[in-house]
Length: 120
Image (cartoon, rainbow, N blue to C red):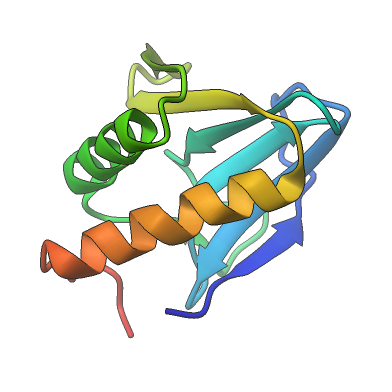
């Protein structure tokens, strides 16, 4: 499954650098921080411009992210955004490539679990 990691400038997200993991204009993850301290978060919203939306099946995304975090022996926690939507944080990741490997594994898990909420 080919996805992109793109720079982001989402309002109200704190971090020296911001990225999103996107597939077919659907935002699955946000990656924020800087080298040595990136945090991967499941995305609850699209970008601040039209044309991007969050993944529809948030329960499947959260479940897959928590399971993969366990496989990576990574710290994870469930938090809530301003609109009380649940999301998962995973990290820290030393490099953006570590975040990429994590996101890739979650996409593989979603595909294996048959989650098809993403429009293709």
